[in-house]
Length: 542
Image 1 (cartoon, rainbow, N blue to C red):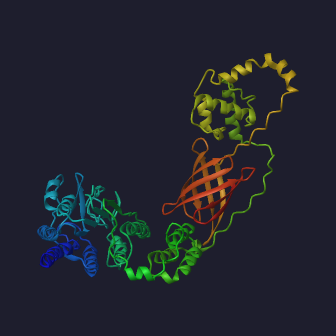
Image 2: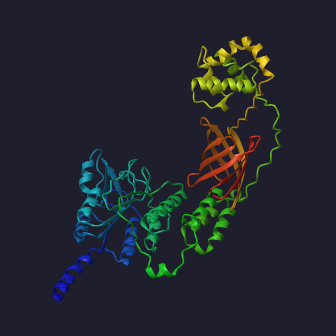
Image 3: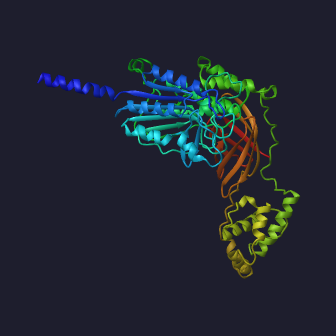
C-alpha cells in the first residue's frame, strides 16, 4: 500500500508542477527592410523579457525577426505549453488590420502594390490564429500585450505605423484570454514622444514596465491605471492615445502576487472611500485648475512619492506654463445687486421678435394679448398653451427667440382651441363671474419660473487653489440645459438639469468628469454649488 501511494505521488508531482508553468513569447521588431523603421520596439521587448524572466517566466525572445524566425518562435512557444499553464505574448512592432483580422508584421515584410492584401496576409502572423493555437493547448490563462500602431502600416509616420487611417480591428478574445492594445480605435500608438525622446521605451511600454514588478496589483486595476497614464503622457505632446483591452479572463491575475508575510505585517495605506488612491483625484484637480500654484501644492503634498507618474507629470505641466499662465486667476468683479421686483425690460431686437410672436399667437387663438413686445404673464401663458397644443419640443424659456418665432409662424389656423373657446365665452360669463368673485378664493400667485439660459461668471474655491471663468448655457428642452465652460480651469462641456431652484450637472473636461449639485438664489441670478472634486463654486448671471 505504501509503495502504491509513493508511486502515485511520483506520478502526480510532475503533473501538478507542470500546471504551474508560466511561459512568455516576446517579439520586438525595429529594423524593417522595406518599410519605415522604429526606434523603441526592440528595447521594449528586451525590457519586458528581463522583467518576466525575473518573475520566473520561461521566456522565448526574438528581436528584429523575419517571417521564418517569427514562425519558428511561435512554434517553439506553443510546443512548450501544457494544460493549465499561463501564456503571455508581448509584441512590439508594426501591425495592420485587413478584412477584420489583425496581422503582426515581420521585419522582411515587403510593402505591397495597391490591392495586394493577400500577400500581406500570407507573409504575416495573424493574431487571432496565434491566440487560437495557444487556446488549443489547454493553457488556463493567456495574456496578449500588443504595442503596435492601430493605423494601416503602409504609410510612413512618426508613430508605430506606415499607413493611412485604418488600424487594428476589435478582437473577439477566446475564453481565458486578456488582450491589451497600446492604443484605441483610430489612434496611433506613439513609438516616441519626439525624435529627441531620450527614454528607451515607447509611450505605452514605459508606463507598463514598472507595473509588471509591482506586487499585489490585480490585472484589471493595473490596466485601468496604465490606460490613464498613457493617455496623460501622450496628451503632454498633444497626441490622443488611450489603450484598449478585451477581457475574457476567468478569475483574477497578478503579475507579481503580494508576499503573504508583507500582506500580513504591512498596514493598508490610508485611502479615500471606495479604495481609490487620493493622489489620482488630487492630480486631476490640479490639472483642472491648471495653475502653477495648484501644481506646486500637489507636488509638495506628494513629495515622498516624487518618482511616481502623477508627480512627474505635475512637474512637467507646471514647468510648461508661461509667466502669464502662472499668475493666480483674478476673481470676477461682483455685479451690482439686482432688485427682484424690477420690471423686465427687453432688448430692442428681442422686443421686435416678441411683437411678431405675440401677433402670431393671437392669430393661432392662443390669446397673447396686445403685441407690445413685453413677455408678461399673459404672453408666457399663451406660449405655454401653444407648446402644449403642438408638442414642438421647444422649451418655455425660449420665448422671444428667433427659433420660437419660426415655430409659431410655421402654423396657421386655430391651434389653441380651448383658449379660443374660453375667449368667445368670456362676455357671456362676465356677469356670473362678477357675482361669484366675492365668495371665490383669490388664485394663488404663479410660482416664478427659473432658467439657466445665458452666460454665467463663476469663481471656484478648491483645495489646491482658485479658478475663475464663464459658463454659457442653452436650452436642451424642458428643464435640461447644455453648455460650454471656459476659464482658468480649461475648456469643457456641461449638461445640467434645473428642477425649480435645484441644480445638478455633469462637467466634462476631457481628462476628468465632475458632478456638481447646488441651488439658485430666489431671484434666479446666483448659483451656488459643490463639485465632486472638492471645489465650491459661486456663479452669477450676466
